[in-house]
Image: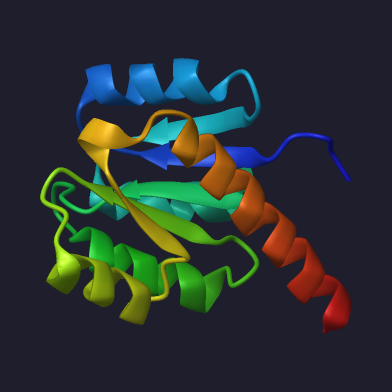
Length: 130
């Protein structure tokens, strides 16, 4: 087992993806960045991240649909959904789609790294109890 979680970032804004990569690089290994909803599930299968950080609004496929697909096809990789339009309805939709948590893009900071580590730890516990 690695000492750092492997993270896939899915965001169509290159500047946001670069900022997330820099932010997470202190505590995580970012294994890939994708910007199109059609590419996320394939990237998850190919790169085998332990956590997927997923934007709600991606081109071609909605983040909630992607979240459902990833949690169905790759149940060991928790999904953290992020959006600039966070509200209770979106948070409930994210959780019902299988996301482990959701974040407001404008206020993530160190909380995202902590959420990734918590999701990773929970997936390890779940994996060992199976």
